[in-house]
Image (cartoon, rainbow, N blue to C red; front, side, top):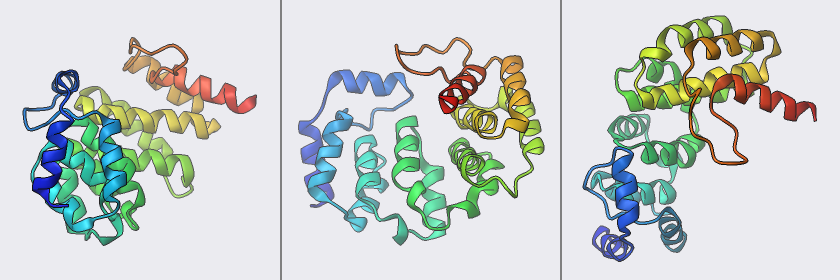
Length: 222
């Protein structure tokens, strides 16, 4: 498919409620408002098309970018391309799908972790802290968790909301996966109070770090 053909299909998927939802969450007008399930279905038909994905990303259209994350081949991206894409993100859903569908499968993603954590670009910082949360969860042997907690405690209150989200994930994963630091992680969460009153659907776990940590530890114990 060409970009024009993809846009023609996306236009038929326009959903005004989705447009309103996207705008409420920070999106601009460059969107069709297709439902996420419809975008996934279109991606299943296209399958992997790296060249088309890059062309769709350049349009800055939200729906096109979400589709791009599903049909791109992360292994074909150069470090420069990956860095530029992360820093060009402009919407939370883009960031979520980029992390889940592209960054997760990038071969040498850890090279960006600390660089992005220090970035003034909020989307790069968000991605950097997401990578840090993953490393805390799976491979923390060479990390200074005390220093990481110091940084979270000092920086998270002033961080943009987009960055707070993944910093909070790093905080929670420290408490969940490392019993030595559990009490301190919970104490930091209590003092900062970020997401204390976050609305949560029935059956879901609160992102408020103390609740999140305690619930995951309880489940692990059975």
